[in-house]
Length: 165
Image (cartoon, rainbow, N blue to C red; front, top):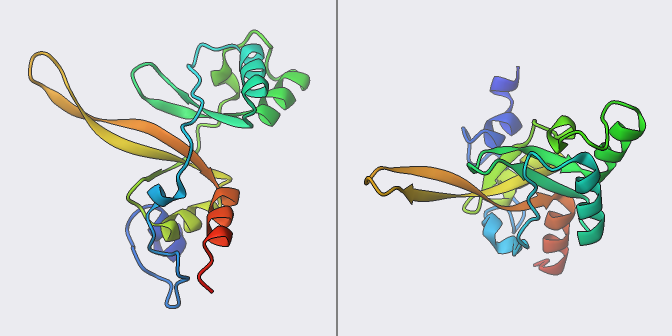
């Protein structure tokens, strides 16, 4: 069962430490990866426009985020092209038709060890930062902002450039 699986427990924040012999980078925070700000697409962007934007800007993927700040998922260049070519989506369809809505989030203060566990099963994680947002009437709430997208290659690059061995 996934509920007694240590990797599932770490990924979902129920366990902090399961590896007995952790690598030197295990407890370093995600913020040390120095990720660049992501390109974000709004849900109404068409598949054709998403393809154009991703190619023009040199991105393979981008989070799809509603104007309210709700993270809807991730769109990838290859999945968008494949879906359109297979007839599962039209160029004119909104990008939400080809958006992966199964994704993992990780915070800037989380460890690279937790990220490593997430990346064992997922191709990427969306890095989020929580901000308090206040309105004119004095009410406030926490809002998640997309800070970046991290892949196994980002983690591998960090580890190889900073290898302590």
